[in-house]
Length: 436
Image (cartoon, rainbow, N blue to C red; front, side, top):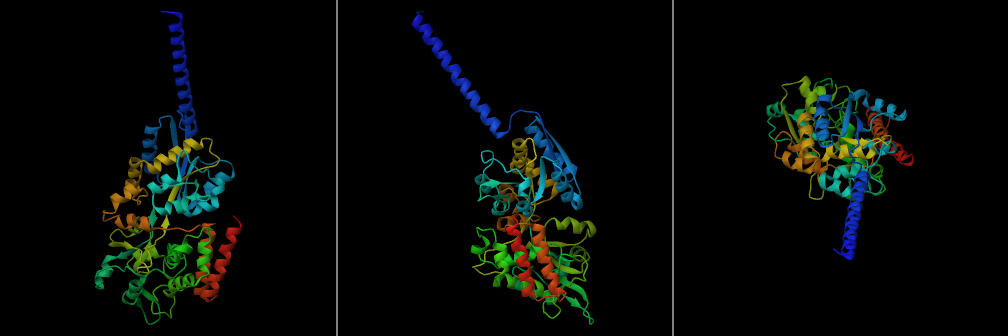
C-alpha cells in the first residue's frame, strides 16, 4: 500500500469521524432544545382530580419517560385556587398545574408558554376543536399557554319523567320552543309561590348554577360572527353595549320576572342542582360535570341530555359555551421543557387521554376521541358540542362574572332597570381591559 493510499484512508476516516461528530452534536442540541434529555428530574403537579384518577396519567407518562418522576398533589375544589395562587406568590408551588380555560388571560404572567418548536399553534388546531385555540393561545396567535385535559360544554339537562308526564316528546331545540314549554311545566300557587319550575334560568348565581355562563352563551348566540371574532379582544364588552346584548339580557331576565308569561324562577328557590334533583325543576342548562353531582344526591333521577337550545334560522350558526381545566406550566419551574413535554403527552397521547376520560367521565378534547364519542348515547351531546363551542377573551373571569351577576341582582331587586344595569356591567368589564 503506497503512502498516497494511506493518506487517503486517513482523510476518509477523519471525514467520517467529523461527520458523525457533527451529527451527534446536532442531535444532542436538538434534544436539549426540546428538553427531553434523559436527565433525572422531578415534576410536581397540582390539580383537583383524585389521586387515583391521576395515577394512571403519571404511570403512563413515566413509562414513556422513565427518567422523570411525577409527584401529584390533589387539592379540593373549594381551596384549590387560593392555595395555588398563594404558593405561586411565595415563589413556590408546582411545575405544572390545572387552570380553568377562562382564567388564563388574568394569570398569563404566572405561566410559561410552550416553545413553538416543541408544540405549535398549527398542531393545536389540528388536534383540538376551535375553542381550544380561542382559550389557550394569545400574543396574536403565536403563544400557547396551556393544553386541555377535556372540554365540557353547556347543554340542556331535562327530567325525562316530568316530560313524559306532561306529554312532551322531544326536548326544545330552539329558545322559542324552550319558552313555549315554560307555562306547561310551571306550577304557581295563588300566593304567587313557585311550586314547580319549568327551568332554572333568570336568577343570580346564588340559585342558578352556571347562570352567568348561560347568559354569556345567550349574548354570544345573539351576536354576529364579526363581533364575536373581534381582534381587539373586546367582543364581550362591545356586545354588552349593543342591542343584541340587551336583547339577550332581557330574554334571560324574563324567566325571573313575575309580570312575564315566561315567569318560572326566582332567587327564593333552592340551588338549581338541588331543585332539579328533587324533581321540582324540569330543566337546567349546565355541564356534564353537573350530572354526577346531581346523581350523587338523587341516584334514581331520569336525566335526558340535549344540545343547548339555539336561536335557530339559517343565518345563526349554533354556539355553546365551554368550561374545562387545562394543564399549564409555571413560570417558576426549573424544568419548563420537561414540564411541557409532560403536558403535551398528557393532552395529546391517545392512550393517556383515553384512560383519563374513562376514569373521570369528562367529555374528550382530542378530535380523534370526540369522533369516537359522538356515536355514544351517553356522551354524544357533549362530544359534538365541543365542536361548536366558542369563547371570548376574559380579561379577568372572576370580575366579569361578578359584574354580570351584580347586573342581574340589581334588576331582580328593583335597584336598576335592565338597560342601566347592563351598561354599568359593561363599564366595569371595560375597565378590566385597561388593567391588563
